[in-house]
Length: 257
Image (tube, rainbow, N blue to C red; front, side, top):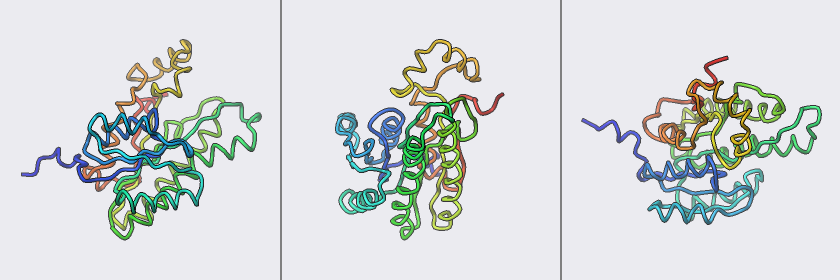
C-alpha cells in the first residue's frame, strides 16, 4: 500500500519562488525545501537574495539565486531560459512577487496604479507564461499564484491593491483552463493578515490589531509558517486533481461578516 504522505513529497522537484528574499516568499521557499524540493529564489526587482540563499543552504537545502525583474518581459524570458538550462527544469512555480500602496483612490496617481499592476498582475502573467512554455511539452507542472483575502474583500484605501489581487484570482482560473489539458495545475494561495516585515506597522497598531483579531475567527494574526502546508499541498501530487482553485489561509476572515 502506498503511504499517503508520499503524495506530499517534493524530492526531485525544482521550484522557482518569485519575491522570496523575505517574508511570505522566503517562508514558502523554506517550506518547499523542507518538503524536499530544490528551490530557486528571486529577489525583488533585480536585487539578488544571497542572504536568503545562504540561510537555506545552512539548513541543508539545495538553493539557488536567480536575479531578474519580474515585470520585464525580456528579463523574464532570459531568466527562465537560463534557469532551465543551467539549474534544471522548473517543476513548480510560485508567483509571490507583489507590493502594496495605500491611499484614498481619488489621490492614487496613475504612476502608482501602473507600478502596482505591473508588480502584482503583469509579473504573474509574464513569469507564468514563460515557465508554461517549458512545462507544456513536458505535460506536467504546478503553479501557485499568491492571491489575498483582498481577492474577495475590500478595505479602505487599498482599492488598487484589491483590483490587482482580484485580477490574479481570475488569471489563475484562466491559466488553469488553458493549461489543465497539458497536465499543469494552476491554483491560488490566498493569505489573510500575516506578521511579516511589510505588516510590522499594522501589527504594532493596537487599534488595528485589536480590530483584526476580533474580526478573525481564529483570533490571531497569521504566522508565515501557517502557509507552508497549503503551499506544499498545491505543489505536490496530493493536488493533482485540484485546478483553478483559490485556497484561502486566513483564519476564517473570508467566512464571516
